[in-house]
Image 1 (cartoon, rainbow, N blue to C red):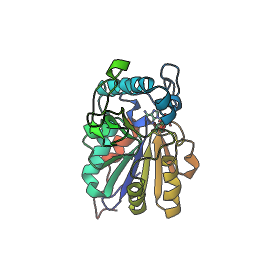
Image 2 (image 1 turned 180 degrees about the vertical axis):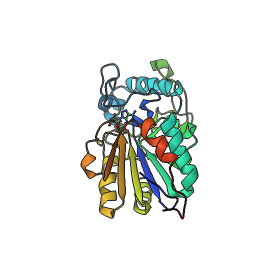
Image 3 (image 1 turned 90 degrees about the vertical axis):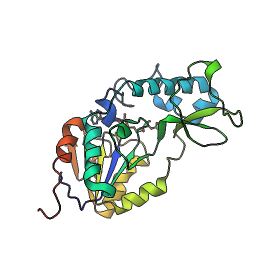
Image 4 (image 1 turned 90 degrees about the horizontal axis):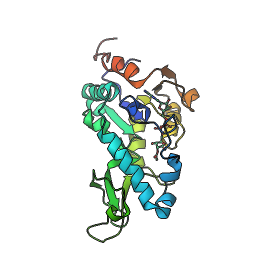
Length: 240
Ligand code: OAD
């Protein structure tokens, strides 16, 4: 894959990019939490039924994310952003903050952020690194007293700022997708939109995603194997 500074790159990342930092993917081995599938704890219904269970799940994920560091693939994307400037846009399905810790700036968390919470009524996200693992510590809004929930997009909820995402996808000349199984929409449909626009589409991951047939190119390899060489091979403007 070759990039020039004239390209406008839209990157979509999924759990696979953080796998080599030590964070489990959702659908791989180890993707279960206490015997629950993510679909059983990441839903409004689970929150209604058992907010403590949900907060224990996200507290565990906060603890896990705090214990790891960005890997060479996060770094490579930050380097590409330095080269391309505002021709770069990173949309991640991940709720961890490893892209930010690798110094990515133009980043959008379409499924929310692990280290933010919000009141179920006031709805204003705020920074929150706390762990809530007992009924006595479940957080309440300081303003209205109602429960505070993770600032995460659960199954059945609408991802954040889809208009901005589609407008970036509309301007891109290359779509690069890294480490996502292509099983959760709308993100899994970005490649179909890109294809309709006739732009280049590339997937990176150790196995083919479910939507593999829609990509122009599938690079089979881990994110830390495949991304660093791309980031150091950006062709300067004016060279063929
Ligand atoms: P998945 O767990 O579904 O898929 C992870 C993908 O990463 C798989 O296709 C793996 O092959 C790939 N992978 C594993 N190791 C890798 C590595 N070292 N380098 C690159 N790729 C690797 O995770 P997502 O597709 O991100 O949503 O899941 C999408 C959404 O489903 C998540 O954002 C989450 C989840 O339920 C919500 O919570 C709303």
